[in-house]
Image 1 (cartoon, one colour):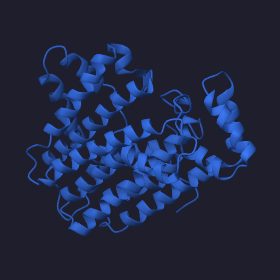
Image 2 (tube, one colour):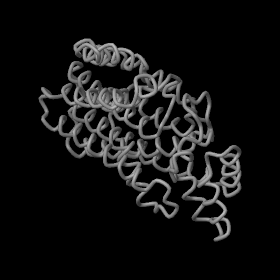
Image 3 (cartoon, one colour):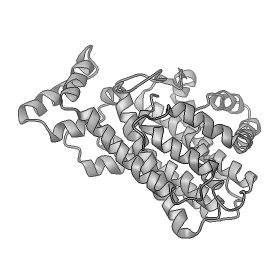
Length: 334
């Protein structure tokens, strides 16, 4: 790989353009969910669905599905993409409530706008509709994959809550948490993409592994962005993880390479992370130990493994865009 990486947002824009017709079809499916919802829900869904994210998961699904020998059924791809994006959105609504987040995608979060009780129920409704999108899918594994991903998302979030503030969090537990709360849905999207491409089972399984590596790298970069490391035009507040007592990869690297006295000092700082100036002190200590650089190197390792699998795909424009996405992910700034 070249040492000079393309801007991830530029690459993602190019990838979306390549599969824009299928993504547009998925958007129509999502809008139909809002329009068909009962009064009191429909208008809120229209507002919520209008706050479009990066569509990374559905874009990856579309790209992979087009890597096969024959073009995929675009309607099936669109339904699957809508399912993945709705499940992702439902998880974000619930995550924002749990984390007390006030901004998402540069706008006021659902629970801040409508209240916690309504936001919880809106998230539940969106989750239900995500399953409905693939209920008629001809490959019966697809609804199961979506359901399994939903299970893992929930388990990952519960694990994260159970271990909040745990200064002795192990690497194994951290990996299990991010595998559930982030990697699982990207893994599911990649697996479904392989199914839609009519790949043989070993390659479909490889697609899932590729998605998992990409998802883990994505979350590690998110961990870094929370500290402002490498961030550009971040559309959410910094230091959210610290304020919520979450021990993420940079801190795990710090604890692996510090003295007992340094650990004690850091633990004291973390407990008062919400106080003015404390987050910056933590930031300085992490920089001293090169904890951010080590975490980024780990993300890069996962991206390299994802790239190795992508190299197995038939060479075409879609494969090239997947490779470009993976190659530029470590430089993502928001």
